[in-house]
Image (cartoon, rainbow, N blue to C red; front, side, top):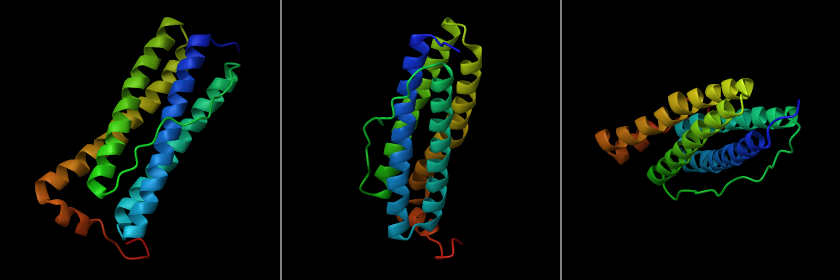
Length: 160
C-alpha cells in the first residue's frame, strides 16, 4: 500500500529516536550491570527490548507503506553516573513523546488511521511505562537520597 511521503518521513524520524533509545538503554543497562545495580540492569534491559519492539513495528509499517526504513539512530547521550543516566533517558523519552504526538497529527492529516492507531499504542507505552518509571526513579533519588536509592538497586548475581 503506497503511503504518503510525509507519513513515511515522520515514521523514519520516529525510528531514529527509537533506535537511539534502544542503543542508549543497551549501554546504560550494561553499565548498571557492571556496577552491580542488578535491579536497574533488569529494568533498563527490559526497556531496551521494548524499544527494539517499537523500532520493529516502525520498520514493518514503513515497508508496508512502500517506504525505505532509515536505520540510523539519533544521537546518544550516555550518562556517567546513575542519576545522569536516568535524566538522559528521561530527556530522550520526552523527546520521543513529543515526536509521537506530532507523528499522530501527521497521520490524521493524511487520513492514515491505521498508522495513527499504532502510534497511539507506542505513545501509551512511552508515556505510561518508560517516562513514568524514569520520573519515579528520579523522584525516589530526591526523596531518599542517592546512596539509599543505589543500595536498593543492588541485587544478587542470580537477579534477586
